[in-house]
Image (cartoon, rainbow, N blue to C red):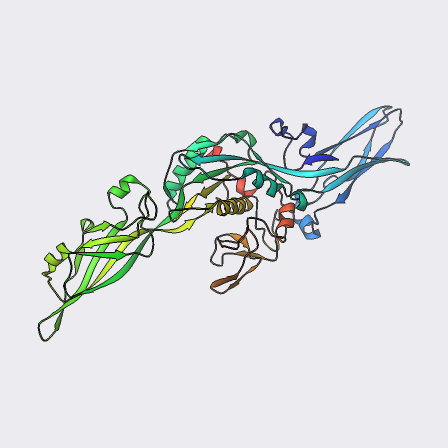
Length: 455
């Protein structure tokens, strides 16, 4: 049996790691030799011994889903000895088997069985001081998926790159994302393998900086000098030393309220007062040694002085603060050959199992999963469990789970489910695997449209 890598072009850079020669790449080179002949016409054809099950609609929709130039006639043009060469384009799927047959009069010959393979390359890039616990061998085995004939052969190349450390990356700020991508570009060394290569970029934490306004009521007989406020999410702190020094997490604090006094308990509305940046401090224990604040302390002394307060005070504090929200396990930019992976979330280390699942999930996105149902363009028909949005971002698989208007229930059985879940496995489900096998991993993949080298 001859292995043939159908998604890679005939370039010398790909002749390595089990690919023996250029003829095992790209279009299959069919050669027929005639000796001592007269004018003759040789009929040739491609027999699909085992296919991926492309439907008629898929084959009609995209050239890459069918055999091209798989049948025809070649002639020796009257030469006594001739070598006839044709190039046959095999479908994009992995793990398929073919034979090339040639017939001259009553004599027929055939090639050995040709089995299709696909190959992509990846490089690991890590922030300084970030040490992900990843079993790359298991990752490669899962995507090769020999039992399911996925044959997405992931080759680790280039040596691990290192980029400057950033504790907390703001996914909502274009300048910050651009800086991170520029860092990754400087460490990326697989440009010679583009557009069939991507980078796994391991960072510390990924989140979105969000400004929120919340109200807190303080009712006291005698207003204390200081008050502790517990917050329900982490403040944006720890991302940048200059920001921290300037209390970037603080936006504004407004105080309103009323005071009662005397035997008649008459109430009077208090004039509005503002708390300054210096009146509010971070406090409490952090979630990790290097940060993670969910508590502040308010110093009331300036407000008391402004309003002449002493006792029987009921106040409402309106706080506008910047928080870290939408913590992300990973991000796969739609048209860039890079995947960014967080090794911590909400200041806590992500387990090896969580990280392994996220890597597979994001690579799935990078190569085109989850394909829509029905398929469009160069995407095969996706699984009937395909969904988009529904509280998640992007295309995903709902196998094992159910969405009812605003709530997800059940236990997802596919790594392409759209959110971290205790039951989500690190493997693709039985509905997604046949789709992965069909994917066209050639040069027109959306996820590889721009490369880090081109930034």
